[in-house]
Image (cartoon, rainbow, N blue to C red; front, side, top):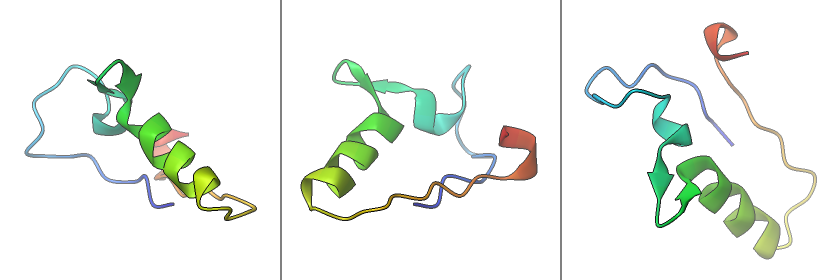
Length: 51
């Protein structure tokens, strides 16, 4: 899953994928959807600044 990018248009206080959406971070929603689809292993690709 691609999780890199600064989100220059995003004005939140946290990384855009860590922002809560319906009680969970956006990243968690995406990872759960990937897992529910039976895909494995799951790799998350981030930018060097995000690590």
